[in-house]
Image (cartoon, rainbow, N blue to C red; front, side, top):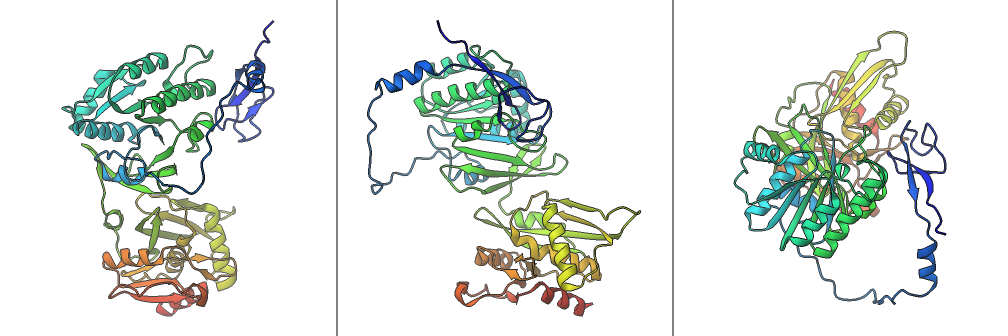
Length: 463
């Protein structure tokens, strides 16, 4: 008699597997996220493996001719940049982001541009009716594109359609959490449904060699909803970031088997959809006023693209008897606390009794340690009341002893600063074994510092 499937419990937030139900997931700490899932016995498959029914896999040497995959450009340069140059046949891309951030808008625009180049593109939605997609296409000005639409959540029907349609180059599924497979005994959006539906769609894409783009929902923490195995199954994972109340949108690659990770594309949301921002540095600094204390320009690097951003700091007397407040937007709160401790311990700057507010203007989230020096300059400027030079940029990592450390791609950061008219740069001091920096761009004066106290003393002398 066949063995009955066992039951296990999977966390819908992080994908961790539990032997029994519990109110809280031990892996991620979320409450009420464990869902029951059937696990089929592996006796039959194990017997087949042991019976030697598999075919021998051909082995190849590491050294050999490399064939780069062909690419199809979407017609949106910022999207192609993040993809690594365009869509690769048989590749699977997962795009995640907050509700209403513009995922469907971006992909409808990209699909319409692809269809306008004569490619066969299918847009399949499980969230909207066909008429709703047509209304959005009219608003975006792409209603005339030769794009095929469908509204369905049944994966079996979708796969059958894809098998029957010839010459399909790209397929958009909006979204994977709405898809449903009747052989799985659970509701759409559950771990088992998302995993099984993604597997069937990915298998169809690999077999028919079309590019598959999956839209994914995110949790309140910003991670992609569903099992973590979903991110391992796809070839590229991209996050669409930004504040819905802000015009800027950032498309960031977190994983890409065919291109660089941490690459970004910058868009501006308008009443006609998303528009590309070819020079994000100029746009991020467009509203900057150089005569305000507590502001500094950071020469950052997002993927291979140098980007200049304004870092703003505000200090206020602590209110009440509690601990001072640390409010951060666009940067790491823990790193701000570390930098405040360094400034107070190594430089004698008294900030422990102040409420500190830090903001990276433009809605971009900065993760690289190179922003330490710019944040420190903004904090020192806010404490002294003296504005930083309007033509000066900062970059460098600050250590716990106060030393300013080297960061990658200094030349690219300096060239971007010179291109936008900056004439001064504060950066880490070069060391003998790492003296690989080329000559600075014409008209750009460099001020190299080895310790954070050099920055503080210079700002205080300016006061």
